[in-house]
Image (cartoon, one colour):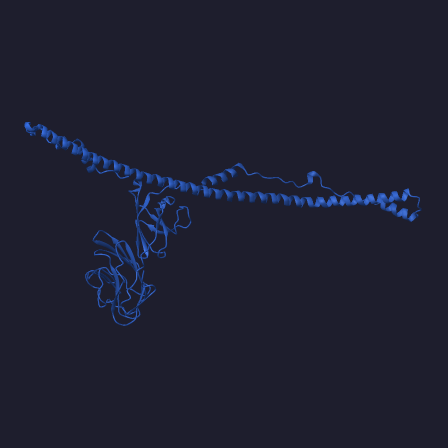
Length: 463
C-alpha cells in the first residue's frame, strides 16, 4: 500500500497551522484598520480555501487506497476460492478412486468366498445325488416285490429267486463328511494398525502450499529466449547463500503439484536465460530454494514474441537458410556479413554454432558484436566492435585483449552473455569449450552481430 510522502503531509500541516504566514496586525496603519482587517480576512479565507482543496485531494488519495485494498482482497479471495475448488475437485476424484478400489477389493474377496463355496459344495452335491439315486433304485425294487407278492399271477420260482437275490444286495451307505470334517471359511478383518496406516496415508495426501521465500522479479522477452531474474523476498532468508531451482512447464500451469514442471536451472545465480522452447509458446515459470523444494514462488506466465536472431540477406557472398539463422560462405573471398537488424541488448544471450570450419582459417576471420554496421569490407577490428577471431583472439574497440579463447573448429559453440551492469556498461561473458572470459564494455546498445569469413567451407548458425 502506498502512503503519502512526508513532504506532502508537512505542506498540509504547514498550511493549516502556520500563523506566521499571515500579516501581523501591528504592521497596519490604525487609520486603515478596517481595510487591512478585511484584507486579512480575505487572505485567511483564501488560505482556508487552499487548505480545503488540499484536504479534498488528501481524502481523494486516501479513498484511492481503498481500490488497492479491494484489489488485494480480491486477489486473496480469488486465490483462496480457486484453491478450495481445486481441493474439492481433487478429493472428489480421490474419493471416487478410493471407493472404486475398495469395491474392487470387496468384490475380489466375495469372489474368493464364492469359489470356496462352489469348490466344496460340488462333491456334496454329487454325494447327495448318489443317495437320491440309490433311494430311488431301492424304492423301485420294493415296488417290484410288492407287485409280485400281492397279485394272483403265477411266477416262476426262478423269477422270485432273482428278485430275492437283488433285494439282498443292499450295498453300503455313501460316506458323508461330518461337520467337523468340512473345510471352514472365515474373514480376516483389517487390523487396527492397518486401518490406522491407511488413514495416515489419507491425511498425508494434499497440503496447502504457501509461497516460498524467493520471488520472480523480472521476466524479459528476448529474441528466441526469455531472461528471468529472481530475489529473496523473505528477510529471514536474506543473509544466506542458496542453491536456486528454476523450473519450467509448457503451457499455463497453475497447479503447483503438477508433474509438468522440469528443472531448467540449478545454481547460485539469481538469473537465467531460457531458450529451449518454440517462438510464441506460452510457458510457466517458478523458482525455489533447493532445500525447500515444496515452497515455490508464485507461477509466472511468459512467452516471447520477439523474432529469433537472423542474418541479413544483402551480402551475396553468403547463402542464408533455416529462417535466416544459418550462413554458408559461397565464394573464396573475404567479406563481412551483418545481422538483419540491431537485435542485441542488455540481459541477452547469443550462441554462435560453427557447423563447418575450413582447416586454414585465419585471424582475419571470426565473429563480432558491434554498435553500427559498415560495408562488406569492414575488418571488424575497430571502435564499437568486439571481435573474436577463428584462432581465439579477442579485440575490443580495436585493442587486442591478453586473454585468448580456444581455436574455433567444426562443432564448436561460442556463447556470449550480455548483462546490463549500468546504463552505459555491459558485462560480457564469452564461453568457448571449457574457457570463459569476462569483460566490461562501455557501448551504446542495441548491437548488431556480424561475421567476417574468407573460405567457402564456412557454415555458421546463430541462435
